[in-house]
Length: 280
Image (cartoon, rainbow, N blue to C red; front, side, top):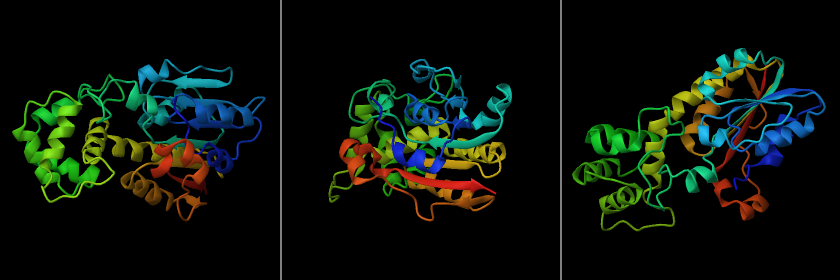
């Protein structure tokens, strides 16, 4: 089961009131969305967007929930399609869900043997298998460095090219491990984590989609509307922080992080950072 990250803080900062309208750009299994709808009764509505078709089909819709299977990169088009107006708040939860990691079978985790897919939408053409097995060494090194901030990007890219064909996630994780210097002291974090992160970001064009989504959210929000974004790595957080500098009054000078109580229940919330802005 996916546990929504910082649900208490999301409600506090979005501050939903009866009959207001909100957008959840990453509705997932609707953990945040249902909590928002409870606060906006009796007439408040929520527009929920989910890119992954399999996740979308698992959502249990309610009377005041409008659902769309699409990417938040198309936010403006989705809002116009549903004539969804008077938006008081918008939420982006950029984290990958427990279901993606453990139930999707698409290779998001380096802990189990799965195909090298990593697509959130099966309509997308690019897969991790294509990058790993057909991109050249320089291209692979560039995405590892840019999207994973991987110190050994060149060594890993070289070992990947030498080890082809790489058929599944476990083969890739082992290839990454073999690329590290013998003198390297392995720590708690798995050495393949940054590589898998980089591939996932590249496959789904996540950073460009985030920029597009934020820009459109800024246009759609009513004056004094609230934008809440939960990010999970430094590249996302940097984009969000820079976006808020213009046209928003920032409520979080430093990002809000998960409480110790939440971390006891959900260790995946450890890297979460929440930022909030009010549209001027």
